[in-house]
Length: 263
Image 1: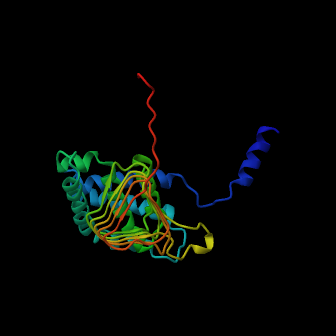
Image 2: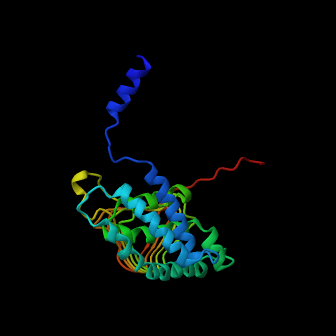
Image 3: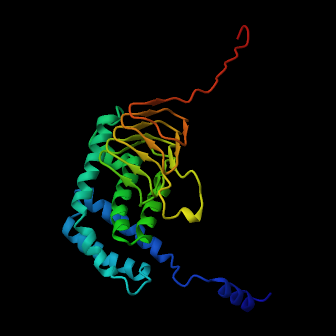
C-alpha cells in the first residue's frame, strides 16, 4: 500500500467531524486558570475573569455543535454561581482540616490534598453540567481524574463539607447523591449495579445520607441503595442493598498467621 493510499484510507475512517483534541487542551488551561483565580492570592479576580470569558468563548466554538442552542448565554449563567461554589469549597477545606489529624494548615489542604482538588474541579464542573453544557464539565473532571486518581462524574450531586481522604481510586457515578458531612477514603466506589445503555436516564448510583463515613475500598452499588445517616461502612465492604441509619457495616476476612518454630 503506497503513501497516498494510506492517507486516503485514514481519511476514510476519520468519521467524527466534531472531534477536535484542541478542545481538551483548552479545557485544561481554562480549568487551571479558574482554580487559581478562586484560590491563589496572586491571581487577580477581575482580570482573570475577563480572560476566562474569552477562553470560554473558544470552548463554546469548539464544543457547542447544535447551532440552535444558546451556548453564548452559558457563561453569564455560570459566573453568578461561582461565589456559592467557592463558599462550598471553603467548607470542604475546613472539613478536611477538622477531620484529618495529618493536616498542618488550611493552606496545605488547598495546595497539597488531591481529594480537595478533585472536589473543587467537580464542583466547578457540576454547575456547567447543570446548565446543560455537558462535554466541557466532563473534560474538566477527567483532567482532575488524571491528576488525582479520583473519578467524579460531573452529574453527581454532592452536599456540603465533603472529604475525600488519600483520594486515589475513588469512583463516584453520574447519578450518585452524597449529602452533607460525608467522609470517604481511597478506593471507594459508588457505582451502578447494572451497566446497560437503556438505563441512561435512570438513577443507577447510590444515595449517601448525612454524616456517613466510608472506609477504604468499600464498594456500594445500585440506584435504590441508600446508606442511612450517621452510618459507618468498613473497609472492603461490598453493598448492593440499603443500610439503616446509625449502622456499622464490617467486612471480616479470615486472616491466619503462621510462625516458624524458633524463628
